[in-house]
Length: 448
Image: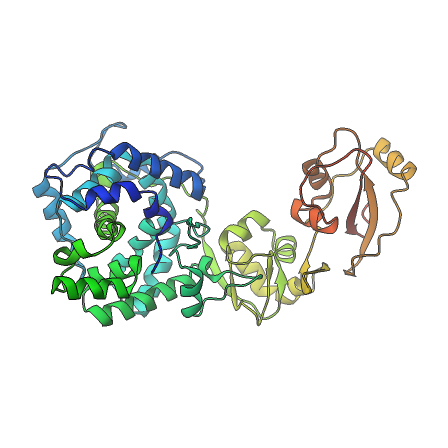
């Protein structure tokens, strides 16, 4: 794709070593550099899980491995297993692929466990779209090599999302990328774009491995390698491809193997953050995440995690959105209360001449103490604030920052999101100064 993926870039040094075969299947003398790179990747993508890699161990450990067992197998066993993976993509096993299998199954087992956990959410979605494009399901494993299944992943060169599209490539595949949305992070739209890219490359080269290579370095480089090598076989022409691409294809094949045979290697899924049913719902009107949160009883953090493409916590109907993802309980509630959600109290503001909306109030605030009420009265906290137009029955006042206050405390007291308080007050950071006055909005009838 004329770019290097986040996940694969951190293996950059090791890939150069893999350009030459190692009879033992090892990654060569700079293996430590590769492993450090993988550690960096996992820190960058911020995969957060609630438990270790032993989440489903009891039910999936059919081989009765001990907790710290790291099984190893002969080349003949691994080669045989790869041949059992039914796919039109040739699952060839060689020294290049072996190096990555060793990396995934031995040196970075916990990383694979975390990605296995995330795959429970993403892979069914990918498979549904791959079916629509008549592509092998194994292409879902490209997301492992590309982004480690993190929709917010971004590489050093700007490639973004689960499938690591560059800006211009994303636009060429009709992904909206603007101040409001980045559809490279949308798991549906970006996967559809990936499918169109792979389909186009396969139609050009007639070979799945060359199509995969093209996804990494671009069709022009692959076409040049085919001409120089006089062959349409990846393994015959790999010497004419960039070192990164020579490692990219073996890394993909290794991911296919390890994800199919993880239990055989005593690797089991970690519990992911998205461990509940999710539904995709159609949107008929523009709506803010804050309206959704307030009316559907769903956390803002969940909405952001499920809908990473929306930059401003706002769904702009007619600009970028026809659907959103919601937890199943919220989707059911939304289907019967759509107009109530759209009509929920909302605070509007103008940013960069673009009209956007956000609801700051998320529930009943914590009642203030009598002393706080007196402090606010004495600080003239009931002054009218009129510089932000308001939709809905809100009352506005100024909160005077007291000694020991921080923004998290104020957010908790008024059940507001930190982001919206910063927007109300044009704050560039969450630092507060004693005596500073903050604009606060709460529904009328709620004590200040």
